[in-house]
Every structure is written in C-alpha cells, then in structure tokens.
Image (cartoon, rainbow, N blue to C red; front, top):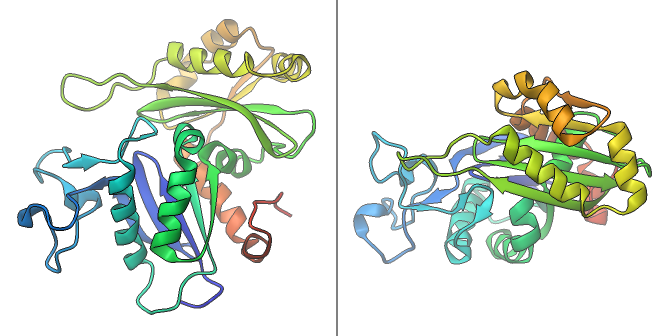
Length: 279
C-alpha cells in the first residue's frame, strides 16, 4: 500500500471496503466473535470471522453478531474488531493509507460517528473522514448539493428509510424510520408510510425558508426497492409537495457513484479532510 492510497469503508447493514476503487470486502456488517471466544467461530489464525463467513449456519442468513441493523450500530466494541479485520484486507504491507473515508448510514452517522472514527483510526492509524450515505447518494445522482437553495433526498434500503436536508453542501437535518422485523428474523421492506414519516420529521426540523423551498422543489427518492415507483403519486399527495421524483438509479448504485466522484479528487480529501463539490 502506498502513501497516497485511499481506503473507502461502507458501514451499513451491508458493508464493503475498497482500496483506490478496488473492492477487497463486500458482505454483511457481521462478525463471528471477539478474539479468545469460541474457537469454532474464529479463523485459522485466531481471528474473528466477518461478513458471510460469520454466519451461524451457512444455509441461512443468520449471524452471530450483526453490527448494524436497520442503519443503527448495535455494538461499538465489536465494531473495533470488525474494522481491524477489514484493515488487514486493505493492506499486505506495513505502510498505511493516506486517508480512510467511512460512509455511514445516516442514523449511525449522527449517533455513532465519533466512536466509528476512533475505531477506524485504531485500525488504519491514519486520517479518517466520515460522511453520511445520503451525501454520497446526492453526489452520485447529480443533485445540486452545494446550492444555497437547499434540497431534500430520501434513501430507501431493504431495512430503513432515510430523508435528509442539505444546504450549501452541509446536512441540515435527517430522519430515519426503521423497518420492522419479520417472523423469520429478517426485515420487512420499508413502507410508503415509513418514508412519509421520515420525510415529515425531516421537514419539521428545517427553518421556514428551507421548508418552503422543499415544498416547492420537492423530493428525490433513491431506492433499492423497485416497487416504490408505483407509489409515486401517493407520495406526492401525502408529502404535499409540488413534485416527487424516484431516481432510476438504485440507492446502492447512487452511493457507489458518489464515492467514485470523491475518489477522483482524493488528493483534496487527503490534504483538506473534507468532501468538496466534484469538479
């Protein structure tokens, strides 16, 4: 690993890690155990197993420790071990990356970013920058994120619905509605009602000027749930907005596109430690 390498870690229900755009890990944000606990749940060198390898039963999607569920971090201690294992996958040498960008589910970003940043610093021993998923999705779908007028974007994943307000490149407010567990230990997909709740909660946190702008300019929905397009008219009516647009890109694709745009300007991120408007 060279001194100008950039590592990106996606921390949501599904996690991933890349080095200069090359994927080195992709799977559930799950870990088998901490070291010195249950030999059967550790790897050949005594390490905790992560991702799909952390399944309690390889025929089912059940895991010993699911670190992030519904966009919320469940265990900060285990996250430190999880990121340590990810860090090993990003380097085969003693040198460290110049910067690590951690893309977090919005709810976890607001509640846990200090703990996540500290855990990532321990794992990589370098500069760590944390950003919310919605910011990457806004960049990835070409939204006017740095416009002083402001905008609202919604992310729909299989386990949560997030709405976020931005103005001049800064997140003003966000709200997340979690899906409900199903009888099989998984999650029900978010309903239009949950998206409406998250959006109304978010608009309620805006100042009068920004709230008026959102009512006029409307909402862009970036979704991993294809069926949401059929609810477009309902969403527009319930939101009482002039327009609701369901973007053709999935949430996952939009987030990855935003990350790619940031990676193209990694020298700025390394030097200034914040995400700027793509040129």
